[in-house]
Length: 381
Length: 123
Image (cartoon, rainbow over all chains, first blue to last red; front, side, top):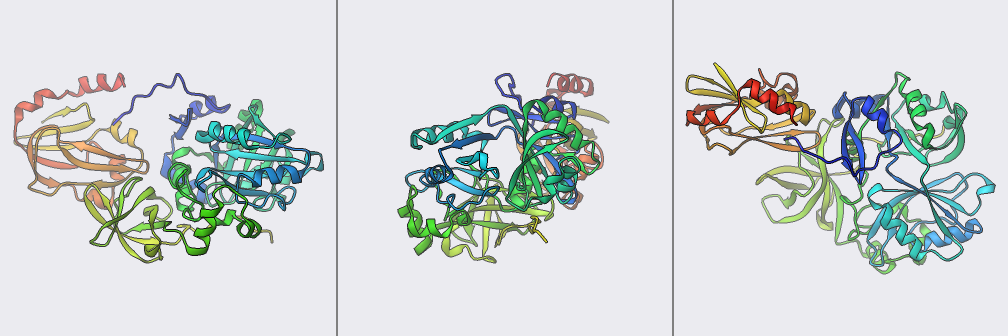
């Protein structure tokens, strides 16, 4: 059951020593040594995040800055690579988008923030998946116009604090965090340390993602962990939390073959872009928007207790295989196994009875709407 | 009653011609929170090394192998409702199956407690 792993070639985040000190089980992930769980275990860490607040080291993710002469130039450059509206993204606002290949497949999914300060006009801040950094950066550099540059940020860590008590815990040290609306961001001090904090996350809960100086990351994390509401949470619970929230994991639920329409993430495509096109793969994507895609990502609830994992086949009840599970496992908040995967569009209606084949047994499952657990994002009163 | 251990982290306790099999404390710790256990039907004939059961944690599925030949005479159905018992009492009440010993000679392929302890130290 044990896996032997060579850690020597792995990169470490600025919080590595803290993870080890906290008793984390470190595993290789996207070239980094990362905590999959701490002493409490995945189940407890998951439930604690939903009840109070979890602290996640996401410093392995890529932080980069696009810089052009003015907002319009930079936004238009990014719009040539993505199907989202950045031209009209307001200062201090954040948007989820996808980098598209010429076939309309997804090279990566990423968060883009327009800095709030006028001094930063022409800049857009990016956070990309750890495993896709090199691919993304090469893509940007080959496609960006000469007057827009990509600079990779190497000297900052990224800490997510997620859960209903997360913003209260963070704003005790960075009061301005409490003023942020969902999907907005601002530079602010955390106990006097210059940080950039966004009200967003990957758990379905309220919370923040904090871009912090690498050399201050441990101090900030220790300060937050000293708050009794905050516990460290590893990649294991990060995965089960995002699965319950119905959020895609790149390389599993979306990849270079899936379009944003098939992936069910068309919320990243604003009206002007849908109507006017002008992004890679626009022919395919606009056709799928018009006629419906051949296959679509759906949520699945299993009826028994046996989990279905990535790669399991999805079949019609008593019939042919029609698709594949792309993520799946036990959902701690639901208290039952859940999954997501792709099926032909005609079998995607919530409530449709399907089967998932696990170890040659057909397990009963039903198509489910997503998220599996209601979102708890912050809405301004 | 003697307890033997396998390199795959199963324990097997032999009492007369009936062997009780489970996973070790080290195994449950490596797995993390157990959420599902799949057990074989009573009467199933297992050969040494066959997949006897499957134990699933939040993170992954792992196989439990038969340390010796034998026929399943009882499965611990309590684990279906309370899989977390595998984390709480892996070497006691959370046993997986009882086998009618098919080939007692195969026990000599296994480790005793001291040898297993030493083995785990090397992992």
